[in-house]
Length: 242
Image 1 (cartoon, rainbow, N blue to C red):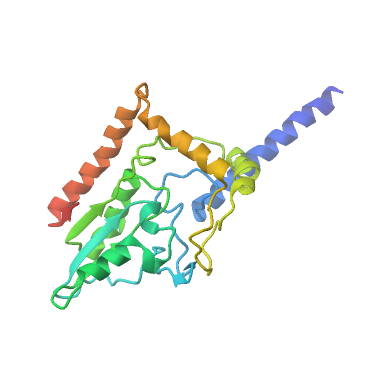
Image 2: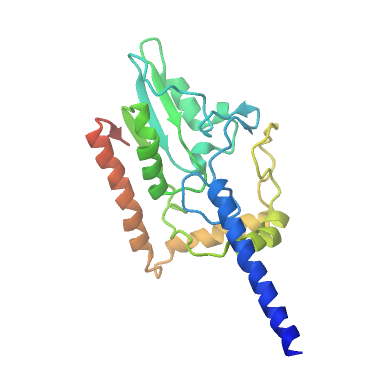
């Protein structure tokens, strides 16, 4: 009886450890939205996949292709941010696309490069600028801050196996939209989340307005540290921040 009990404990424990190792190794090679990850690549679009009827570029951004070499006479803007930049609307309706279109004229040539990646924050904006954004030789760096989640404390040391189970049990039944990019038709009347789930998300975010939320100033300070680093990079690279 004792031997059976030992096997009943040891075998599931070994299985769990092997599953955890496998999931972490897979996520390291192919980052995805299921598991916790603080890198800027977790929610990056799949290169050349579709966001509605628009094929995103080779870098996984919801934008057209831009060469690193800036054309003569061009004023180039690099825009950093999260899902508000990537957009839940088609490319042609994205506010950065419209901004670029409205600014450009006969004597003005402006390129607004949308480098938005969902579920990122100031730390990832800084890393993305260092690793990729500066290579475009921008004249202006725009950092878009969403106070609702840009100053959240990143998740660390969470079990990938347990996180995956949570995803299966909670997210899939509640999600009524498209989880991955695909060639589809945009419908402005369709909901992404069920109403009860949407309200639950808003209740979680409204906590930042609680006067007793003592750790929020620390989160602000931590996030703004990376914004200041971006500003310093802009100064040293002769770009401007906005």
